Image (cartoon, rainbow, N blue to C red; front, side, top):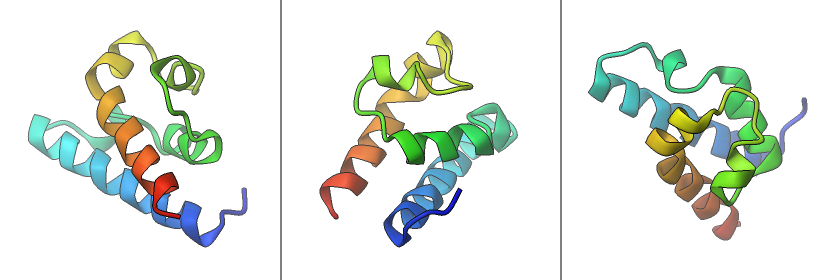
Length: 81
């Protein structure tokens, strides 16, 4: 999947966010969300929990635990374009 410069930046931001969350919890980053899940987030750019739940690798627990912070990061990236 070819990404625009803006989408590359968003993906980098989501990777960094995932790393920070994983470090805080002392777990591997992939347990927060997989690379494929983050790429799908960049591609689909969900703005609600319902849209986030349609992303492969996002279930009810992960949406409840991480959804708000990832949705905010996506929204901020789209708004700043």
